[in-house]
Length: 278
Image 1 (cartoon, rainbow, N blue to C red):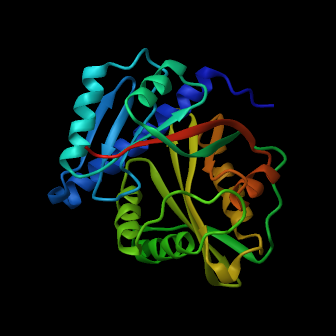
Image 2: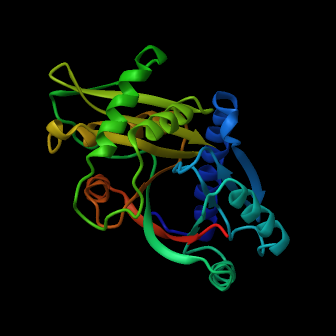
């Protein structure tokens, strides 16, 4: 059993902050006109990539002391100047005083997301569908990889709690291109009988393997594609020396069901709190 300690949660949240910071750094180089920023906040980070981007959020709070009100006000102002709401994703293992303070400042609960994990190395190795082949995806396939991920996200499974967010295709394409170019980020394509069926990504950070950006084209679902992508990345992460793999899902979703079948356990939940721009 992988115990969900506050120390483990802090490691995972630190990795999440690193992914956001690296992605925004790429966004700053690719499209500076959107005025991206990454601002440290109470041990976490506040990031803005582009209007309505899923990378616009505050993450990692509650593991490095109390929230400084002046620093929070500065972050709120930065989002307000860009006409963006402030979305805070805070773990239920974080300091509870932060959620209380955010609520008093007018932040409203919008939903939840689950963080699941498993120890590495993953043993025994999960079985793979024999017709599914998973290989690293080089930069020459970046457009094909992005197309699969965005198409998969555009046709989500209806199982579980629906996300409170939805994004236009062009915006998702830009976000995935930013993330795909971030430090430590690797991409993978899955093929069924030689046909591209799914895509996923992996980021390694201080022993934490982040499994993100996974999607299966609708016509290839329920054929073992996600299981094959998951098993391949777990094997790669273990060989790289990671001791824990993590994935974030919508509560009760098919994605959560898939990873739990491969030994992942629910570690903690993030509450999503949103404050509209003044």
